[in-house]
Each structure stands twice: as structure tokens, then as C-alpha cells.
Length: 440
Image (cartoon, one colour):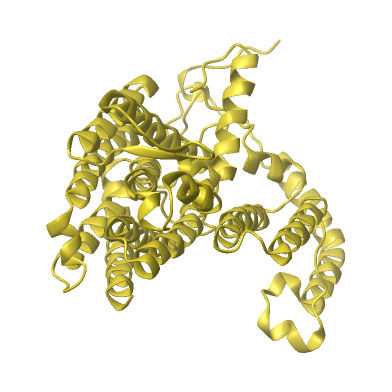
């Protein structure tokens, strides 16, 4: 565990320290696109944050390769090198898209090629545990197609949810934390070495997100762009593929293969499809495709109909919308994790139902501002303090007549100072400098 934590900290530190220089580089390189109709931010913000995240990934894998226990992962498995190859390719495509806005179909082709590169190096689904059937071995073509589909879906799900400051990095970090706890349990408790690469991938992914998140919280100083969102989506999919399709359920439990799979059903449900862990981005992806297809648009056409846009439309603030998405992601990810540990516990089900009720209540209270007790006002942001809110309201009421009087006086001065300008007078600009305007 100490080596995993060291790898996580190194990855987070490198990502955090490089994000500042990368921001300056993005500004110089002109990777600051104009604000689009679907954007939420009000000022042009540099992208290319995925550059810092990629170098954080490289640093984490490099450190893990030189540690005593984690170095065995690189000796016994080729999966870390497969991940690094696919990540480098998808990162390069994302950087080009952040700078030049490449076509969506080209990005889709690049995602499929990156997944194929990982498959060629051994990171693929070999078999699937099917309830009441047993372990089903997949052919080479079946495993390749399923792996490519899983990678492409996960990448686009993460990319679609990247619409608010800190949303994608925070949600993926939550999913990676739940994923790390699950894979570490499989590796440490059952002694399954095949789960070690997935545990390493989850630790590195958490470090990438935690290192970038301080720069990306609202108001964001830099965006991760497609170079970051597609990268973290690929790492998350690679970890899920590694532990789901390559860990034999029969090695975890004794008895027949069918009994082993039946006992593993609660554990494998969260990881048979990574979309269960990132259920919120996956739901957003499906709804976006259905919505755009229904309108006769391309599934890749951008719009303002995503879940986070809906939260803003019903009245939630930017920060509160992000926290609500965090809450639902954590509830689904850790709820599935708790159910996989003890599926027979009724308390887990009741706790999940209770938290779901709280989440629904939060969705229905968009304009609710909590009243903080006076003794706790020093520990909360200023906008939640009663005295500050009351003072701001009184000050605003007092300044309204003064502001109105100043506006009237400024308008009168402006009207008096207007004098006609003769044709050809130097020092003026626009149409007045070129010729007299025709009065109608």
C-alpha cells in the first residue's frame, strides 16, 4: 500500500507542478478558443491541460517501475507498456484537437486505433464471467471488438461530461478511488497477481486527477481539453479491461466454475462494464445520442442539453451543480463497491436508498441557501454567513438611489458634450473620419 500511495503522490505532484507552465504554454500557443454558445465560462480559458496529466502518468509509471514490489508488475505483465502506448497516441490526438479542432470522425478513428494498439500488446478481454453459465472464453476477434468498444464508449462518456469546471476530473477521481479499493482487495486479499496492473492504473489515475483538480476548480484557470478527458477515459477503461477480462473467477473461490462465477456475480457487476462505475457520464452519453438523433443532428454535434447544463438551467449554481454530480457518482460507485463486498446486507441497500432520497432532495432545492449557525460562520464560505448577506442587502438598497442619480447625471453630461465633427478632421475614427453622414 505504501508503494501505491507513493506512486499516487508522485503522479499528483508532477501533474500539479507542470500545470502552471503548461497554462502559459497554451496561452502562447494560442490554445484559447473563443467562447461558444454551449460554453458555461465567460472568459477565454486555455486548454491543453492534458499535457501535464500525461507527464504525470509517465512519472507515476516510471517511479512504480523502480519500486521493490510494483516493479514485478512490469516484469510479469506487458499491460503497463500497452497502456502507455495507447495513452501516448490518444494524448497526441487530443493535443491536436485542442489546438486545431479536428473532425469528430477523425477523433473516433484515433480512439479505435489507440484501443487496437493496446490489444496488440496484450491488454484485452480474454473471458467474461456469465451468471448461471460460467466463464465464457472469447475468441481473438470477439475480445478485440469488445475491448475496442469498451474503450471508445468510456472515452466519449468522460469527454461528454467535461462541461463544468472540475467536473470530469472529480468524477473520474471518485470512480478511480472505488476502482482502486476493489482491485486492491482482489490483489491483496486473494493473492491474485493479475489484479496488480489494474490497481496500479487506478492509483496513477487518482494522482492525475488530484494533481490537476486544484487548477481546474471553479473558476478554472485551465481546462484539460480533449487531450486530458480522452486520456483519463482511456486509463479508466484500461484498468477495467485488465481486471474484468483477465482475472479468472475460479481462482478466487473453490468448487466448480459455475459456482465460482455465481459467487462472483455481485463483485463483477461493477466492472463487467465500466459504465456502471461512471454511470452518470454513461447516462449523459446515451441521452445526448438519443436527443441529437431525434432532432436529426449528428450524434457528435455539440449542444447545451447535458445533465450539468440542465442543473444550471433549473437554478443551481456552478459549484453546487458540480457537487451534486460528485454526490451521485460517489453514491453509485461506492454503493456498487459496498454491495460487492457484502451483497447479503440489508443495511447497505437501505443506506443506498436513503442517500438516493437525499440526492433527489438536493435536485429539487436549486435556490436553497443553508442557514449556518453563528458559531460556525467562521468555518464556511462568506456567502453562507448571515451577517454578510444582510449587510450586502442593506448596502445594495442604499446604493440603488445613488446609482440611479449618477446614471442620470452621466447621461446628461454625455448629451451636452456631443458636438458635430467636421469632415476631414484628424484624430477621429470610423465613418465620421471618412465623410459626412447623410441625415434622413
